[in-house]
Image 1 (cartoon, one colour):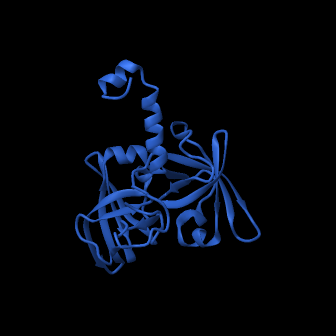
Image 2: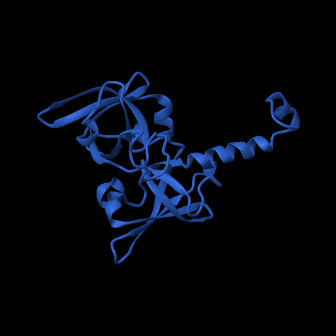
Image 3: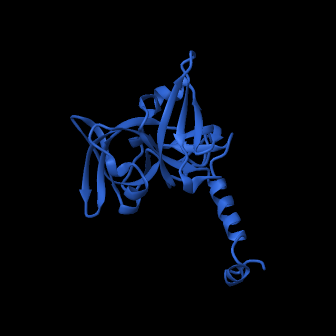
Length: 215
């Protein structure tokens, strides 16, 4: 489990197709302090398993493999050498909970539609609302974009807005995002389960009975 509080931005050193999946080698620092093979690291909000790690004259790095399903559902399929990525290790049991529950299971990809910069350096970003997530992204609710825990400022029709403070723009990749960029979206886990329960509640009675539900 992650919190959406990005620890550092790393960069893609290489990205190669690998038997239907994709192998990423990511340059990093802080997130490798206690790394081991099999550790989890969120890369732009996608939970990946470390398969190798090391250091060379370019600095420390780790490698991870993204399976076809991950490539289909996220932006990792388009990752290229030099891309900046948000990195976070899983939350420690004795750590502070600074953001919200982020599982590292991306739901969809969204597109940045507009950027409005304010005099205080903050920005209001408008994103396209993926149809499958309608009702799961709500005003004042939480959402993770590229692994960053954010609060939804508004939902209007087929778009939703995020207000981003200067600090977040500085320490994550959001400060470099431009109109047309695509980002990974993970809805709040509570919203996901509520949507699932509501969908189940609308099932015909015979299907509910077969599933052990109420009639």
